[in-house]
Amino acid sequence: MRRAGALRGSDVFVVRYAPDGTAVGATPEVNVLPAASDVSITALGGRRVRVSSPQAAMLDVYDLLGRAVRRHPVSAGRTDVDLSDLRPGAYALRAGTASTIVLLR
Image 1: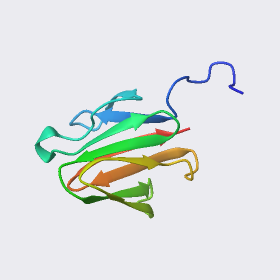
Image 2 (image 1 turned 120 degrees about the vertical axis):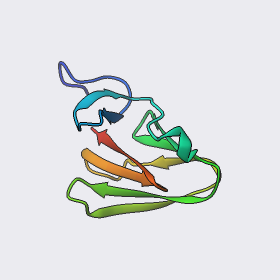
Image 3 (image 1 turned 180 degrees about the horizontal axis):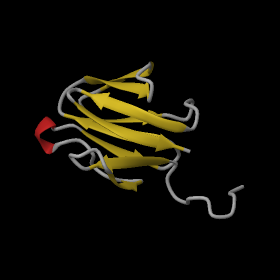
């Protein structure tokens, strides 16, 4: 059951930041990692993210205090990662040298 005024759609939102650190938007589906890294993270419905990488890597998940809360192997190609075991909140995701922030509700 949703509360009045609750957000609809995906349960994972990606927050994008300008170079000065100002949040410039949040969206449920966006390629958030630089193209130069050849790695992308796309929010899927149901608190899942898809990591696309040309080679095997690790997806590291941190809370906003910088504590590692999860580590997930990523195969070359596409790997769907279920984040439903995490509590609602903001998390930093890092794959290779690229990173982003997701909000789980």
